[in-house]
Image 1 (cartoon, rainbow, N blue to C red):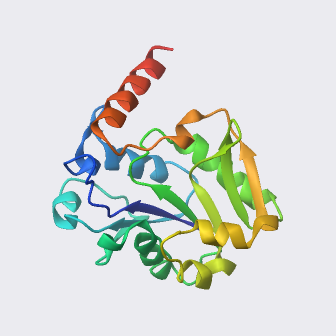
Image 2: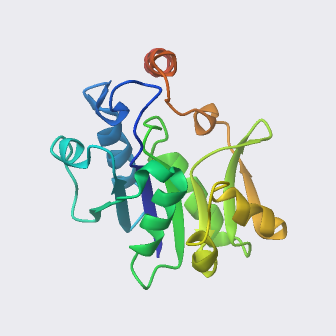
Length: 200
């Protein structure tokens, strides 16, 4: 079983307001991320909240396969959320898929493609790639659990650098795997891209 870990504990400093709660179509950004993961083949999902966790939790809906954990060390950055998610994953987890809470445009099809690649490969780290650039979501086999729980400033990149031969890159025609939403300009551009895809 691969457990999805949605990282959404940050302070949204560059946005100036909790980006998880910004409108996205008929819902909000974080709810769309949750819904995408829920509609995928992931069997269990862990949502990591931190900054303004109560406010955010009150505005989202979770399915039975998703549960929330609180990262009280969120001010230490994304590494702390990765560690929180991995620490709270079920003991039987075979792998962890890291999803970003500010990527509402990564739909179930992309998640399933990465999952499928992991399940069919003998390699233990799977990363989607667009135009030669690595994006998200990324899968780590559970054999890296201790290393993931020990990451610091460089985050999960440290684990990647230690296991270059274990990495499978999966080329996708999906530029959205490279895009997250950090600033008001990012948000406007992402909304415009989403509208453009609807019209295509």
